[in-house]
Length: 178
Image 1 (cartoon, helix red, strand yellow):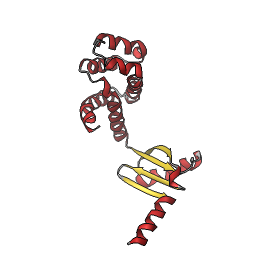
Image 2 (cartoon, one colour):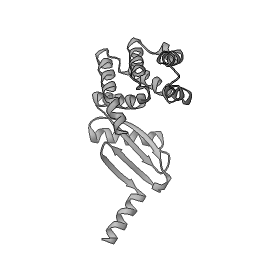
Image 3 (cartoon, helix red, strand yellow):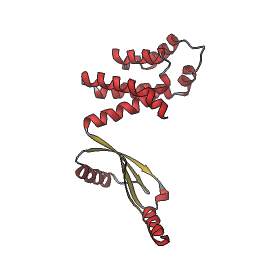
Image 4 (cartoon, helix red, strand yellow):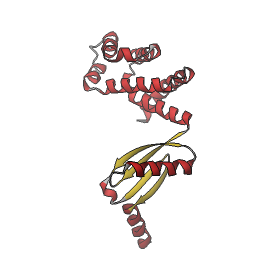
C-alpha cells in the first residue's frame, strides 16, 4: 500500500495544484470519484490488466462511460495514467487528493465508531463539540461495531478518544492485573 501511495502522490499533488489554481476543488473531487468508480468496476479492471487491450481501446472505453463528465484537464490526466500504465492507482490518487483538499480547507477527518447507530441530532452535537475542541471543521465518518458494547470511539488523526464500555473494561482489567 505504501508503494502505491508513493507512486500516486505526484499525480494527486498535480491534480490538487491544478484544481486549486482553477478554483475547482469540487470539480476535481467529482472527476476523481467518477474515475475511481469506473476503475473499480470488475469489467474495467479486467481490461486494465489485459495486455490485448490497447491504450486507445481502454481510453475509448472509459471516455465512453464518463467522458462527458471530464473536462480537458481530467481527460489529460486519464490519458497520462493510461499511457504510464498507472490507471490502477486511481483510488490512491483520489484518497491523497482528498487528504490534500481537507488540509487546504482546514478540515479534520474523524472516524466515529459506535456500538449502536447514532441519531442525527446526537451526531451533530458530537461534531459541534469536536469542532469547538479542535478549532477546525470536522468531517465525520460513522461506523458501527457491536463489539464495543456501548459508547463511542473517536479517531482524529493519530489521537483516539475511547469512551466505550469495552475500552473501560479493558482499562480496569489492566489496572487490576498490574
